[in-house]
Length: 402
Image (cartoon, rainbow, N blue to C red; front, side):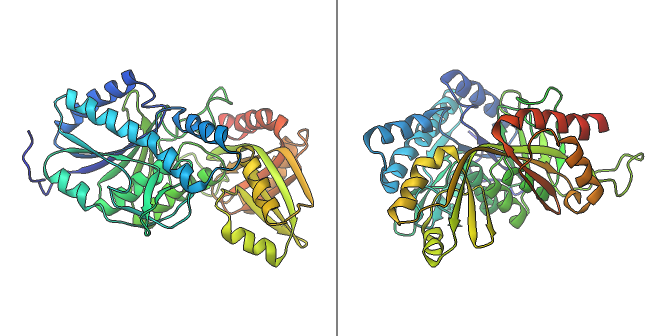
């Protein structure tokens, strides 16, 4: 048993494991074995876990098998069971390795949220129980994705919320590092499922990572990156199968290649969001009130000539339709099978020559509109062109630039 007092020079490492990383008993045992080796190095470990792969979807389906529009409070009560299963199994696996451990729910961990069931925001963290158990030499396992509201109601943080839990706890504990373990080696220049030769990004700035996350990258939740930026937490995305170094999200200056042009517009990565629905709704006071009460994730929104455009994922369609209908709001138009492709890199959106190049290279794919900011160019297009566009732009702007 480790000395009960944490040494002042002992590192605190927060590690988050996604659902595919702990998808079955064998994977959990393998991770526990690797963690046992790290424990014996002397680090204080806090582990944040998601539900096992497909568990959350299974629980969703159970709820919607009972009700077409389940209570969001009861849905939170149901969904948080997934992470509780994961945390307990991992704790048991660590005990089998001879490692003292204890598991906590989000509420037991002191993650305090607002009242928005299904997509709650963290108000504060009061993780004194975690600190107490670390002082006893234990590994602490925390159920991600969940917390407790100020009125003592169980809440969830929305899809990908375990990432947010991990970085929030790292902030509170003053952790030396937050590691996000997943089923890929790190952050790539594009989705390895779509492109043949994606490049692993060993380093990426928090700001560019945030742009990628808000524009479709599934490796890390954008709210987690916001925490990392606000509180200066260094985050690394790495493989749960190898524990090898992955992608470090950091502001550390990386030496430039001497052959690089100092102001060359360069695409760092390409992200995308598919299977989107666009609602066009006349702007009104009623719509403003609706947005205030909306708990669903809106991917993008625009106001144009008195109309509000909302882009939401197809999986939210039934609930959004019901939400609008319940408030007497009739969309002027509703269109499905849309997608965004996003080229991310510093200065891209303010370079007319680069925009001209993008227009030329995507002219055969029915680009509906483009948007730009200082770190990205976004292309709206039909969903059926998505794969081909990503592959072509990745070849031109990343592979051929290596």
